[in-house]
Image (tube, rainbow, N blue to C red):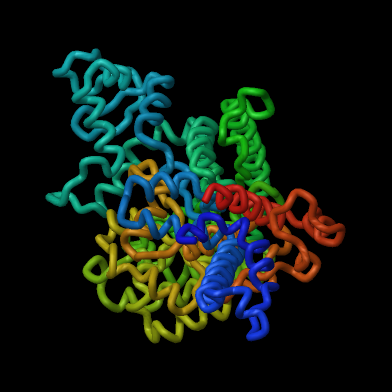
Length: 545
């Protein structure tokens, strides 16, 4: 009986047979060794019951628990953890700058197709005519880099954080300097950029992306500078609309539809050879350049509200550019006032704001004390990008509790926070946000410049913050819960457990055939449909374990 655990399928009948044998004083004579027999029977019953108990417990263990168990078994084996995370469903990427998401190798190809030149010293793109490919020329055609590995590698290093080392140039300065170097290529190849980024995301098992994109090509700030400044926001809005801002919005929408359609064509969507990126749902957040003069910034913010009110591809707006530069610091409160006013005019438009992407030493201490709170309370941000300096805010614990109560999500960008601010590991506030039940989601920020991807953002979270599988799954779910997709969310409760809305309570989330009431609900909400799709992806993924 020593192998009873391995033979547990036969135990039920064996236990039944053993339990009906009667041992009593009346038939001791029939069993000379009755004491030994009784002991044997008791051992049989005990072992069978133990085997049945373990079998029941194993059957009761959920697929998520088994997956979590495997996750813990490879925690200290980075290659196996990486393989696990690459296949794991990741929901959405809510903080993704389109220009910065494109890898330098693709940007070189885009520039070459336009016959652009490159400054050999600064690696900045320049319009033609170009010099020859001789090594002594200062402005060779960028195609020359294909046959010159030194030039090719120099460009990649200049256009990204690859091989950057602390020295004369900070990580912060090197990171932000890349954009002006490759801008001539990224701005004229939007469709190709979308295609390459969403294709990578599709391979990583993402299903939704919100791209931050200044899609008007500078038309709004140009109009703003032409109209000029007026401190009366209502009057300034009317002046801009009368001067043609809605025409700018219409042209911007038309151009984005063309770019989005071309990207799908690039990926062969709708054909048997469709690329992985075809499976992604994509939306856009209008990206305001807050480092420009205030008349240009107001025009852009107004355009963002107009686009998100009229074009289903645009789901919100955000203010970008380094938070520590002079104009963003100097005009910060004015920018919040602009948002506050326009939010009153367009109350349904979603707002996500960069805030707290600063650290001690980068700016004076007083500038660390209010950006996140002001973005939430005056800027009406539903999501905060970065939020790294949260513990330098006035009453940080009170702010954390307020963000949790308001359900304000923080878009966490671990790689860029390390590269730009030098904030990583235990110095990063991710565990603090989790402790105070502030919803968070991992995102890539500028994965091309950072030379990262979403899988490695997850790996950083595991290695740097010792997160469990359940934590990662929660963040993936939160990414879709806090997306700006239209419709009610699937989850009625997300604080402690994820409990579906009442019409879907009896359903196994993610199944192919939801109940009639749940199916009707899903038909009315694009956001809930994406969440249902994620639950199906998790169910399929966890079956492997």
